[in-house]
Amino acid sequence: MDKQQVQTIERESMIRNRLREVLRYLFLILWAILVLFPFYWMILTSVKSYSAYNSEYVPKFFTLSPTVQNYIQAFTAVPLARYFFNTLVFTLVTTALMMIVIIFAAFAFARLDFKGKDIVFSMFLSLMMIPNELVIITNFVTITNLDLRNTYLGLILPSVTSVFYIYLLKENFEQIPEELYKAAKVDGTSDMRYLFKVMIPISKPTLVTVTILKVIECWNSYVWPRLITDDKNFFLVSNGIQEIRENGFGRENIPAMMAAVVVISLPLVVLFLIFRKKIMEGVARGGTKG
Image (cartoon, rainbow, N blue to C red; front, side, top):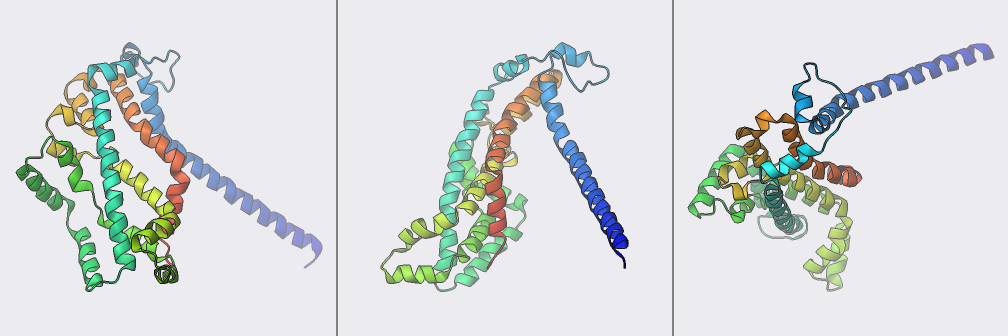
């Protein structure tokens, strides 16, 4: 094979590689447009005036006269600020309590030796096989019998633990060499000191990921808060949006409804953009053992 043939083959290979790269980026751009378009349409609708929105027989993909009046109406027509406060309390307290529970539980299963540990952990994992609907029914009966409906405690208690997060964190803790634990015990280090000084700092990416995922889960919680509360003073933002839609305001004034949705969605979007690298790193770390 002469030099010219080699150059021709290399040129053809380069063209094929570039073509594949162009097609890959075109696909990613198309996919990004499909994913981001609903968010764009939501924000666009939220800045259109009520009259402009209703006068559009054919929807327009832009507006020359944006307005913030819809955001003002979203906070004045319904107690959206109260819903925000309730959701913030529910999210922060639930996440904090759950992190305490899963950290100690994962440490016990990963490092402590006690009789029947494997059997207990297997039974614990079997709880993941129970349909969520059955758990909700049991929790509803329990909270009702304790007279905790329409209370923060009733909202929070059923969500302070997670079998999946305990399993994820246990797998992460087990990646830390056991020799470190044995050496620490030889030096007289207590289990609690070893947990807080060694295991938690090393597992920080996974802990950050679990925290963010739990925050998102609490913020988007709908079924349980809807079931356990009928007092608007304890509504979360998800239930508040449903209440806005049901009371006629949301059905009549779509731009204001979209403004409320934008306000509610913004904290989670910002949270994900800030910690997206930590989330990816924590998931990858928790899913790889060895």
